[in-house]
Length: 132
Image (tube, rainbow, N blue to C red; front, side):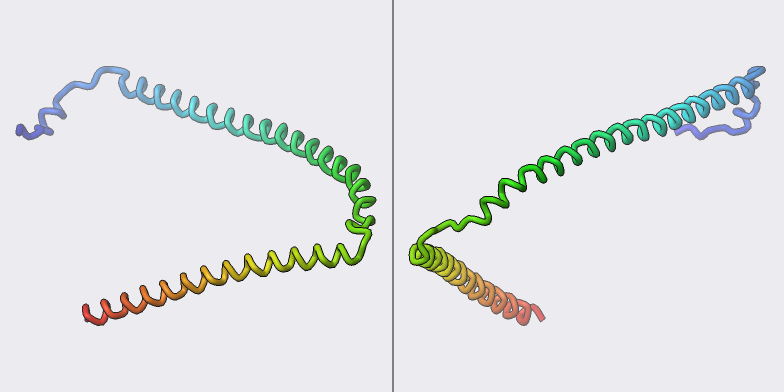
C-alpha cells in the first residue's frame, strides 16, 4: 500500500472562500436541526394535550355509566338467590365439594412435580460431586 504523503497534502492549495462556505453550511445544518427539535417539542405537548382531554372525557363517561348501572345491581344483590334454605344449603355443599375435588387434583400434581424436582436435584448433586 502506498503511504499518505502529508507534506504533499499540505502543498495542495485551498480554494478561496472554502472555509466561509463550510462554516455557512455547518451553521445552516445546526439551524435546521434546532428547528426540527423545536417542532418536535411543540408537536408532542399538543398531541399529549389532546390525548389527556380524550382520556378525561372517556373517564367521566365511564364513571357515570358505572354509577348509573350500579343502582340495578344493588337491587339484585338484596334478593336471595334461593328461596328455599335447604336447596341453598345443598347447592353450597355441591360447590364446596367440587372445589375440594379440584383442589385435591391440583395438590396431587404438585406432589408429583415436587418428587420429580427432588429426583432432578439429587441427580444434579451427584453429578457435581463427580466433577469435583
